[in-house]
Length: 600
Ligand code: HEM
Ligand code: HEM
Ligand SMILES: Cc1cc2nc3c(=O)[nH]c(=O)nc-3n(C[C@H](O)[C@H](O)[C@H](O)COP(=O)(O)O)c2cc1C
Image (cartoon, rainbow, N blue to C red; front, side, top):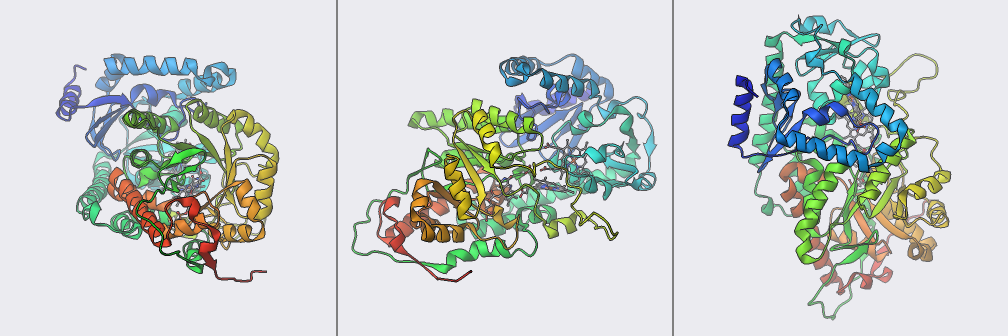
């Protein structure tokens, strides 16, 4: 704490009246075996009225993880040796948590943690490479699969051996070998990733400071462009539809993020159909009924909900806004709707649950609690799925959603283009650009896995997401699952798949009783209150929305989420009035008439 740099930092921290809390780690569940040990102990996040700075291994980053101040290495070491009171308190709490958690009971988990801990030597301090400057020209010669270097934040890493084990796929690293990948890397990796996953000898040295400064300037310029653009958006109250919220977000997002949120599989036919399928039905209002008092309340996933809508789990909210999923937690809690949390969230489940607990304190005075459901995939490494489910269940998540339409990632061509993915023109086994996709989601998953999942769910109801075929709804019923979400993942998986709403129409027409026996939800392309009412009329308990919440939080943070929900609320209430109903159970199949297409 004695060095000049440290006191500079202390000065800055005081200025923003900071409250310390443990650093946010992306997507690492606190009871998971993949918890990175070192960043936990060296990183702190400071929050004051929207100002977030992070100290990681002696470097101060702003909310966009842009480096603000680098502390000299002695103060960084000092920083590690003499911990602040908060750090000590934080550690005590972490230790206590770990003791309570499953991790301690599982000897294997302990081994893994230990291995990570002993491997985790921060790259910047690796002594053999410190002090050596490397030019970008030199880096650019290491651009092959068997000789791959990348630059992150002015530091050069040899990823020749690592890329084969990269959870995000080898090709993304190989296709970027020899380049500065900071901008690609930062938004999707939690602090400490490099230190935890790369061995000290993989750190090759620092980029020539002049070139590094130029790269940082470019990054800072982009961040400041985004901040300014966000600040000059029209007042959120003036936006009148979800489409306007989407336009606001897309007006300033980087092309990459805009693409990730908007991307669809192949030609995007299914994504377009999702929106259009609501146009194939018409509503039949009843007249001369007293509609002075309307209640759009209902129960979804066994939880009270202010509206028949919920936040469909979608990953990587942080790409759009520095507070990411936490914006959604706050917005959903404060309007009484349920948040579906993605297994691929930017923030860890623990962080999101902490935010939910904060919200619950706020809601206590009304005697209510926030509704939260957690979405999982069956991962090839079942222990990882188990750890996620156990954490969710132990912390009171009210339902689990098992997404079953993503046993392999859909082919989003626009995304591949932006990433610079190249294909393979050689004869043989390879079929396309994404065949090296690591087996993260288990392609062998089957109905036979349900007893295992039910056991760890410990009574928490399970819903299948990504169902299309009536026989799969029947199978879900046979397996005594709580329900099905008719969905095609926002058109991002199998292009030309039927839409969720069309599946509802078809299943309702063929076997209306089935829709009563199993709770049915729909998602995909829902953008208006009247879309919601059409689905409810045909027996859906509720509908999910994915992109609208990503866009609205990207543009306006929590306020955007609240605005999106308020827009939908007013559209639903007005729709109910005009339909001549006062409660959702009065919205019945006779109130909707659908175009009869013949598909077979
Ligand atoms: C330089 C060394 C790198 C290391 C040590 C590294 C490490 C990791 C790790 C540990 C994960 C899993 C994170 C998680 O579970 O949330 C991951 C995922 C990923 N990484 Fe990297 N990475 C590196 C470089 C890159 C680069 C250059 C890119 C280019 C964009 C990239 C793209 C991704 C993607 C797309 C994922 C998957 C994200 C998801 O599943 O949602 N990585 N990486
Ligand atoms: C070869 C490169 C890549 C591979 C193999 C890859 C792999 C994956 C996988 C496995 C998922 C599903 C993750 C999960 O559900 O946990 C995913 C989702 C996602 N990845 Fe990538 N990724 C790649 C590149 C990227 C890059 C460069 C970015 C952003 C900079 C990115 C952003 C995303 C986003 C936003 C999602 C969520 C989309 C969804 O679930 O529909 N990906 N990716
Ligand atoms: C960027 C993005 C990420 C998504 N990530 C997930 C995910 O992690 N898990 C999941 O079950 N569904 C995911 N989905 C699908 C949504 O839950 C939902 O099915 C879909 O977005 C609904 O369509 P809509 O965006 O038209 O509302 C994602 C969708 C988008 C657009």
